[in-house]
Length: 263
Figure 1 (cartoon, rainbow, N blue to C red):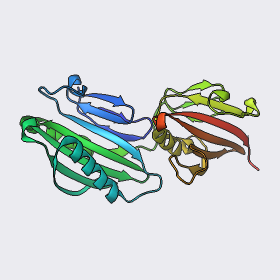
Figure 2: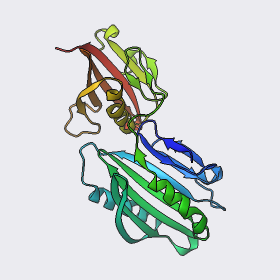
Figure 3: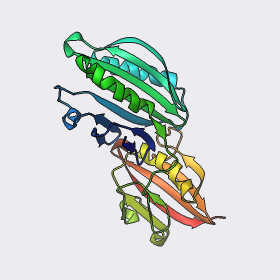
Figure 4: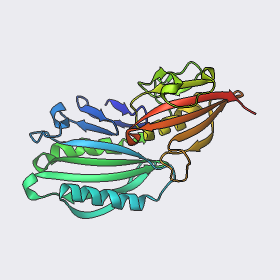
């Protein structure tokens, strides 16, 4: 079976041969046929699995997060809760539940939540009731294969050896931050990745490329003086002060890096 690995969040799962998937920013959808990935498709084979990650840097208890999730989905879909039960997949733990949709929709809806350290995965499976026999087994197998990898392949590096999220390009530092005193000491990069995923990317990939994470200030953080995520990375006497600057309420983020030497 093919394996999907998210380049930012680092989760992986196996999906059936021939299935399609689409990444819409924070959400990845998997379906047996491409048309099922279209929001308005309601025909034969409309079933899909959605995976939406969320950063949980302060390790909030997952029970309130689960209650918020199940209540939100029930209200949005006009569904009734049928009860929840614990869900465990490898080292990931959380909850799962069936939601009863209005009979006229001819759909089954299952949701789950799995936590692994500072990352939470929100899961959703839906399909036509008369296609349950064909869809439930592969969907359950995909959920059961979920795991996190230690590193993702093909990570690009900046000229100074800093790992870069996919699709990021170099820009002048003044395009990202103000008050650059010494442009030669800076690097800056622009891309379209959400700031939550970029934080997880650096927590995982910086150590894999020789950088020690000596400080980390998450975003969002109501106690932080500046609205950005910050890392202090150290390698062989070099210090990289990395700032992740959110755009569009964190749906995208820029990267600014100031280099120096350890005291």
